[in-house]
Length: 108
Image (cartoon, rainbow, N blue to C red):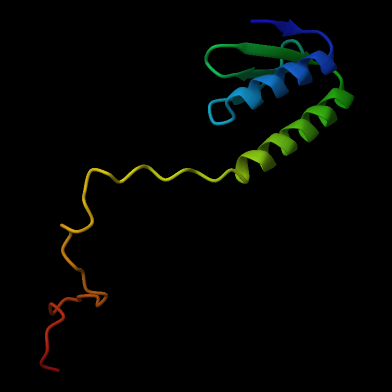
């Protein structure tokens, strides 16, 4: 697990990791009260990068970076799973009418 000491190298490593598989990349933010530092960790289960921030200026940079990645993650459309297991011709036609407690029959 590489521990980065400067922000540009950490940001470049995170961008590369996130570009390889955005759906699997996770961010972990942890406050270490004993050291007075914020630990930032990014992983995709194969590779992990960590940066420890003690300065408020670095927190602003991290917040901006998180906003960019969260906005990108929110705009990704999921692909629909293939529905090849059930043929559409064999499916029974369904009614658009909702059935209530009485069964939706005639007689009112």
